[in-house]
Length: 565
Image (tube, rainbow, N blue to C red; front, top):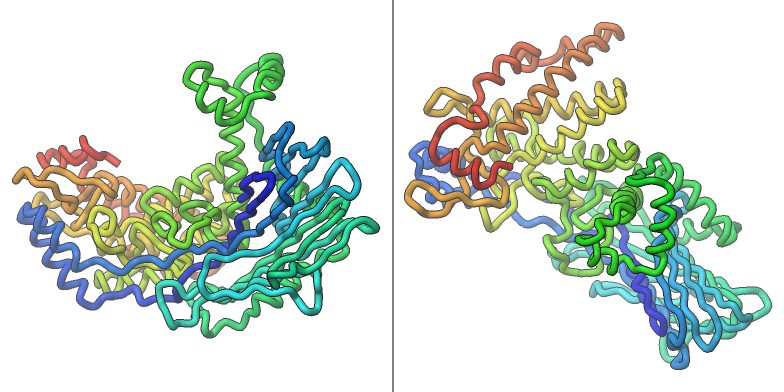
């Protein structure tokens, strides 16, 4: 994130694998006893007591997404803005720019993060030769870190550290960032700061380019950092070595080509070209903040277009093949203790991050989500087996880098919701319906859907009216008024539960038909090795036995009215 200061600038850095902790144990052998107690209380309509008893199903907290650090730029005391100042994020090229005037000299800073070259680049230039002077340093808010000048490359600042976080004394993820400085040939000098071994001073240059690479020791959600074979410092240095022969213009062109191959797939125009041209002239002097304030009056269709493309930019920038899944704040987090741990929340936030991927023609950006679902299915199979004595796999409302699958802690409103995996699996079938990628369906989507449905079949139990119901059940993050007038959150068969389960069963029935056809054509045994419980007729028989979305029970109707999602 670029803050846009003049005399001082901060470029805040994140690396998407920088999390606290290590792989965890997401099982609890005492959970089945607590589950039986909660189910009995729900059947007796003692919803307040069921809510309290559900604490026996709680798991632990998630781990926490951490900031990597900051690039600090400091200009001398005379470097104050006495003229025009502007800053922009160019969505067409994914480039941030800050421009201003000091003493009649126009200064420009340009920043971009390159996916193909895995570096962040900054170009500082001025309209008058020899006018670029500043100091640059790295900073880190994490306690276990060290910053030094590279003895083998005097123009490199190296940050190394460890991220143990919530597990003091444990070997956390190791990380490194390397900042390399290049200045114009002929004009300018670079020196080490006299009073600080961590920074460099540039004086009298025409331009300066900063390149930053970063890496970590993360080697997958099931590898303890203590056993990692990755050397983050070597990997960060290697990334810089691989772009050493590329100019800043080359790096920028490679970045733009890569980004625009996705961004230029979709355009949106909400009004006529003539009106758009007139609006372009009108808004050229209006800031985004001014357009937000005036939106209620002018409705500004061009601003809606801009917000639409901003959403696509965010997904392109935070989720690419090989990256981690886009978390609660995408990838952008400046805090050691971020809100809600910055963890992926599966009870709507993670799904919302990826809903635009297919309608907005960004199918590649969804790959990290499928990788995450695959990891969740592995840890979730143990949670299903031990905690619920069920087959298949289960995930609750929040996860993290380590594929946490057990329930959260503290409050049943959000913790008691074993539908996270099921809701994520709707993305698998939707991806197939958009792309008709039969290889993806057979090798990725179908096995995950099958495992998810296996848990759901075991999770459904026969209720007092003979319907198959979910118990316990919550409508995420909501309360309802129980028959005794008190607030509770745990009941049975929330509308959201039943809608998701029906969608998964229907998707699996449709997927099975395609997989069956493919298996017959390819003479393989995938279809024929399926458990009898997952043939088409089995699931079709289950669907009408499930609790209707509106079942007439007084307390359930109040829940639908109050929080139907």
